[in-house]
Image (tube, rainbow, N blue to C red; front, side, top):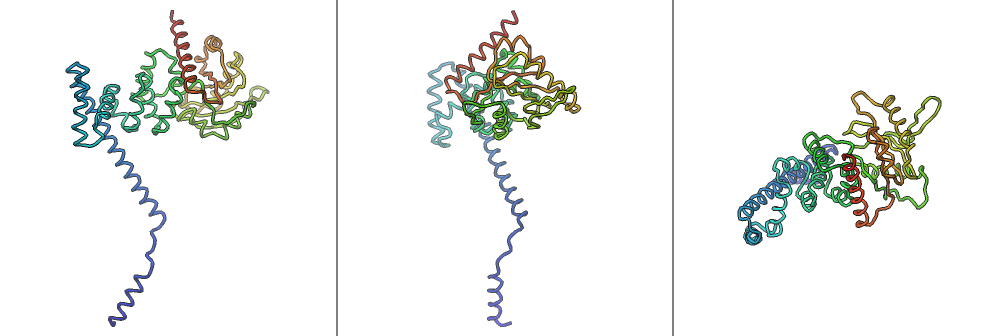
Length: 359
C-alpha cells in the first residue's frame, strides 16, 4: 500500500464517530462516582467534627484547670490568632469558641460518635445554641433516627416540634428515660411520635370548610401531611369501611407506622373534642385489632384531630390507656412569639397537672 493510500485510510477511520457507551453503563459509572464523592465528603466532615470535638475538649480542660474566666478569654483569643495564621479562618477565635461549646453540650464522645453516622457539622452548629439539654438531645436523636437534612432540622426546630410532642409534657426524669432508650435501642414510643398541635397550614384551607374538605386537602398534600406527622408513617386508606352488626362505619384516614409496627387511625373533627369521640375511636381500634392486625404487630393507636380540646375532659377520660391521642390542628401558622407562648403554656400546664396527680 502506498503512503498516500495509508494516510487516506487513517483519515477515514479517524473521522468515524466513536461509539457512545451504553446508557446503562454510563448510568452505573455515574452512580459509582456520585456515591464515592458523597462518601468521601461524609468521611471528611465526620473527621472534622471529631477534630473539632477534641480541640474544644482540650481547650476546655486547660481553661477549667485555671478556673479564671479572664484567662479563658485571653487564651482562646491568643490561640485563635496563632491557629488562624497557620491553618486558616476555620480555626479562628470565633470558631474555637464554638468548638468549646460543642464539647461542653456534648460531653460524651461515644454519643458524638454515634450521632456522626447521620449528623454533620452543620447539624451540630444548629443544635449547640439550644439551651435546654433535653430539647437538644431530642432533636439530635430524632435527626439521627429520621435522617433529617439540615434544612429539615431547621424547620423542626423553628416549628417547635419538641414542645408539640407528647413527650415534652412529661416530667424531665421520664423524658431522659425515653431519650436514653431511643439512643440505646432506636426504640420509638408514641410519646415521641405524636404531636399537639399539628400545623396544617400547607392545606391552604379557606375560612369556611367541611371535614371532607380537610380530608381532600390532606390527600392532595399527602407528602406534606406525612412530613408533619413524622417519618415512618405510610398511608393505607381513606374512609376505611368497617361493618359492625348491620351498621357501616367509615374511618377518615388509616396509616401504618413502620417503627412502631402499628396501625394508626385518624379521625377528623371540625369541632372541639367531645367525650363521645373516645367511644367512637375505641370502636374503630378494636375492629382494626380484630380484623386488620398482622401477627407480630402491636395494637392499633388512634389520633383524634380536632379544632380544640378541653384539658379536664382529656385528663378524666384517661385516653392514653386506650391508645388514643387527642390533638388540635392549626390551619394557619401563628407568629413565632405567640406560638412560643402558647406551646410553653401548654407544656407548663400539662406538667403541673401531672405533678398534682402525684400528690
